[in-house]
Length: 146
Length: 142
Image (tube, rainbow over all chains, first blue to last red; front, top):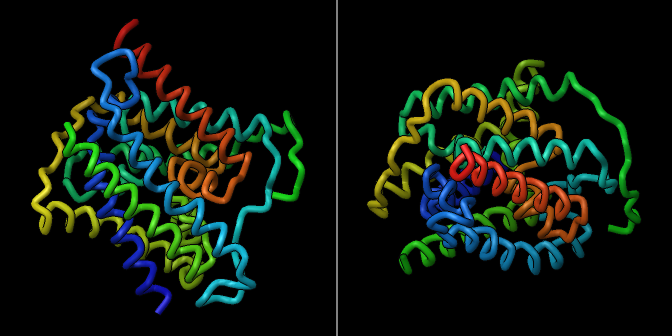
């Protein structure tokens, strides 16, 4: 049951990624290139996504528990620290170099381009390496009432 | 051009709906980088049953993309064709950064901001800014 739902939700997500244009690396780079021939359309992907998640997440989190499992499984870290910022900046550099973030990279495997497979493998390697490195410096402690 | 905006909006609505249903039904955040990495690391540690849902979600991602092109006859994008060096470098940075920064465009951008997490808002500002800066340097300065 839960596995079927995961499969269906992944399918909905993947269809959305492909339709939105996020699996087109060149288009993503045109979106990030503000001073070039800017393609603003991809801003509507996150914009439209947030139109769904902001109100629905608010309502869903008022529930005692999710529909099919015993409890919510949510991140508990509320600290804006150097690790978060540094990691996100590094992710952005890779994204701006190539044009794929993780979701579209995995989705684009279906195009059977060897480069995409190499990208996804390198991504896994990068994640492995990240687990071996540690930085601990809190920049902004955030109130934990999130 | 207007078609691009409509497609982006439709795609964004589908992505947001998927994330909302995930939280409502299974109580989880739809962060692709986390799903991908935990699927791999759990499997390497022989913990298959707890992580099977992640593999199913990943299979769905690929199947959904196939569906979009098959059913909606959506044109397949041109290959990036960046060469092996840039591909490996890009992949390493995206992988390292998303694990180090605990999330990517979906986990922080769509879901984290969706639940009004200041941590995710900070992360999203960081990767958007560095993505824009990197593209600027590559396309206009080098």
